[in-house]
Amino acid sequence: MIALPDDMRVRLVTALILIVAISQLQTLPVAATVLAAAVAVAAMSGIGGKAWLRMLHVETFMLLLFLTLPFTVPGHTVLSVGPFDASAEGFARAAVIACKVSASVLTIVVFLGSVEAMRMGAALHSLRVPEPIVRLFVLTVRYLLVIGGEARQLQEAMRARAFRPGSNRHTWRSYGNLVGMLLVRALDRAQRVEEAMLCRGFSGRFPWQEPPQLARSDKGFMALAVTAAVLVTVADRL
Image 1 (cartoon, rainbow, N blue to C red):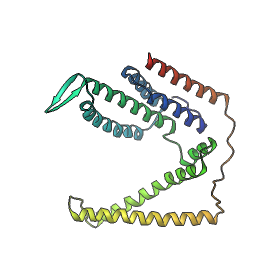
Image 2: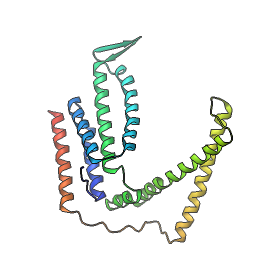
Image 3: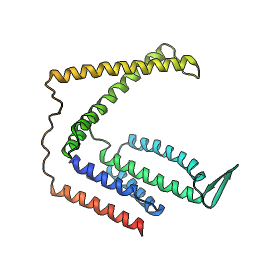
Image 4: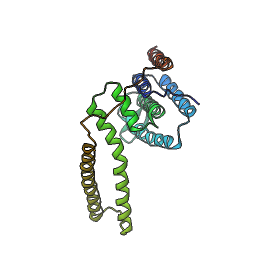
């Protein structure tokens, strides 16, 4: 098991450094090596099965990339489908993009995947992110789950009334009513939450605690991340 830093500031900065470095990769061997390293780190960090399930959704999107991008990049033709030609350069570019996206998503999952919204907000605030952005992030993450629960309840109520989706006007009207009801409930909940916050003395800022000083081990972890990012970038340019 890999022990990650407890300080969320270190995790955020480290993830940002690594993702910036990954996004600049241009060669397939280096991108594939970085992806393999990300998979190994994710496996050793003990991420749950839900995280790997999310990765399957990402890889499904990457499959669409392989089906479309090779036909838009000029180069040596390796496959012809009617009037369309797929190039080897297109497949190589799709592979590089797929490796970069997958490695970036794994980096986010490892460093930030199991973090609570308030803890993430406190780290963002300590990194001098503007207060309105932090507040919007925290409340959005918190109440997306609540609105999602209400959406599931409404869908269960529709199924209890023998609703069966299909490609017809009744189905689209029903889904339109569902979305409208969700918007109405979300607005009503937002007003009640605002009133509750004002009753508790909310003045536009959350009462964040002062962040502690970074430990020497945290600084060393970030230095290691910077070193890895630099080495990867240099290897990609050679």
